[in-house]
Image (cartoon, rainbow, N blue to C red; front, side, top):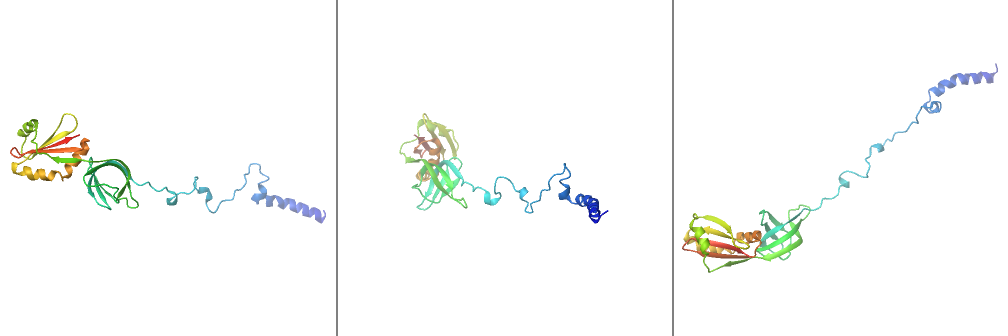
Length: 218
C-alpha cells in the first residue's frame, strides 16, 4: 500500500465520524433533516402585528358632549351657570355666548380639556325667554274650589285646557303678598315653563283665601 492509499483509507475511516458529528455537513446526507433557522436575539418574532402598541399608539379620547334644555341661572361676561331643567344638573360655561339671566336654552355642550370641568356651547339649538307676569286678576273659580279642599302649605298641579298647567299654593293669608313679590325672581317658574314647553307664566292670587295660582300658558 502506498502512502497515498493509506491517506485515502485513513480519510475514509475518519470521514464518517467527522460528518456524523458535524450538523451542517450531515444535513445534506439526511433527506429528512430540516435547515437550522437562526434565532433572532431581539425577540422580533414576538412582536405583535399591526404596528405600534401601548400608550403612545392610543387614540386621544374625544371630549365629553351633552345635550339638554337649561335654565340660565347666572350669566356673566366670562362665565355662565346653567341648570338642566329635567335633571337639575349644574353646568358651568367658561365663555358666555350671549346668554342672560332667566333665559332657557337648548344646547349641545362640549367639555374643555384637560380637566373637563367646564364646557363650551358646541351647538345652540334654541333660545327663548319666559315672561313671568304678576297679574291683578284673582284665581279662577275652579282654582278657588280646588284650594278650598287643600291643607295649608300644600301645593297641587292640574292640567289646564289646551297647553300648560296650573300650580296652586295654599298658604297663610299674610304670606301671600311677599311670596308673590318673589316669584318673578325665583328660578322655579322659569324651569317649570321650560318643562311644559311654554313661554308665559301668569301669577294670580287671593290674599283673603291664602291662594296663589301660577298659570303656565303658551
